[in-house]
Image 1: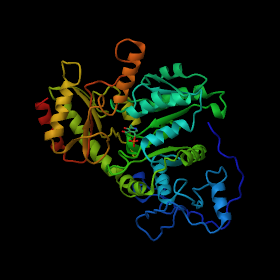
Image 2 (image 1 turned 180 degrees about the vertical axis):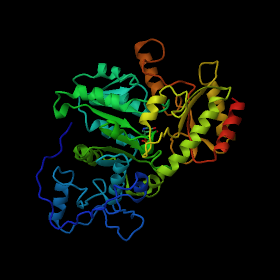
Image 3 (image 1 turned 90 degrees about the vertical axis):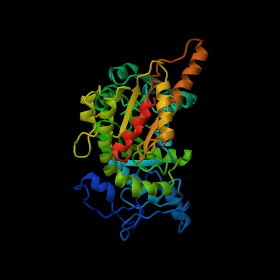
Image 4 (image 1 turned 180 degrees about the horizontal axis):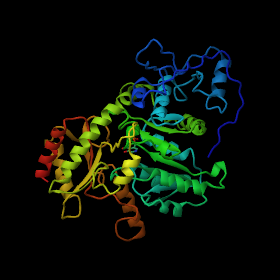
Length: 459
Ligand SMILES: Cc1ncc(COP(=O)(O)O)c(C=O)c1O
């Protein structure tokens, strides 16, 4: 892991300190709406809504101030949560994104957040900032397709290998960890099939493996919390070292903007800022403002409503004769129901199984003919269910992961099969051809069912 400049600097003189405000006593649902309220990032004590700043570069009163700004950026001795940073250039740091980062960190009970242009930019930063050639990542064998592609197509070019295991059995992780392992990476719930990984159990294994390792050799647990959102689950409180999100999904909530974030301990703040500065995937202030003003403040209200509908729809699907199986953590039949109840809880400790549903249809072909027919009918004739990738937004979305979001598995399989000269399929591919992913939105629940029902009639 690259170390950031260990520099000693005296704090700049006469910088306004953030006014202390005891907002910790308020429920997180309330704090998601009001944020830090008084932040050193920007003086908006007269605004009810935080301002959208939009300035690629910042006026500097003297070259000395410019030099000081560069010196203090990502500097170990400067605490920008307590004093106004010297803003220089948007790619490095800027106030609107900074306010969003404070609020996202609070939502996940983390010490800091660093926002990126997309979820994939955040995921690649979380891995690349912590690894170097020769290192190993241990990952769950089912991941969002582009994350799988990152690990199979791109990380190897940098000399970073990934070992895929079934993390539903945490003992598999212990077996896969070696002296080169630096990251244990997974999603929970898993995209697309909603498997759960026990975060606390993984941490226990990693703590054991970390014994006797130097700081640079530490293994860190990184969890993609995009499916659950912080409303349903806060991985840092369960043992993860870092959380990543696609802000494009549930947190952004309206499907208008892309974004990503890495949240974790202060000790990793500077390395992530330096990485973002040089690789350049910074989130622009305009999408940051939308997430800050619309997405995050409405997260709790949206998720509470959407997960009620998801429960209703999952129960309805489960009793339909054309449906083979349904996975939704809120169903009694969910194979990891006990884990779901302890791990997926809202801010008040109430079971929060989320807004994502996964199901398959009875299909004698063993391929995805029934799923394709059903999805195509819904895409053509449905009104409130849209065939589209992405998830977590106010509109209900449907897709076939095998041929769409997770097609990287098929591509990697096919290449491997060609190379090895034997049949299709690699041991890691558990994305089934007939799987259907449904991201429940805010529409009336019976309208969603009406579209599903007519699709099933024609499947
Ligand atoms: C679980 C998960 N993580 C990460 C991403 C990537 O996010 P983005 O599309 O914002 O790059 C996605 C996108 O679908 C996702 O589903």
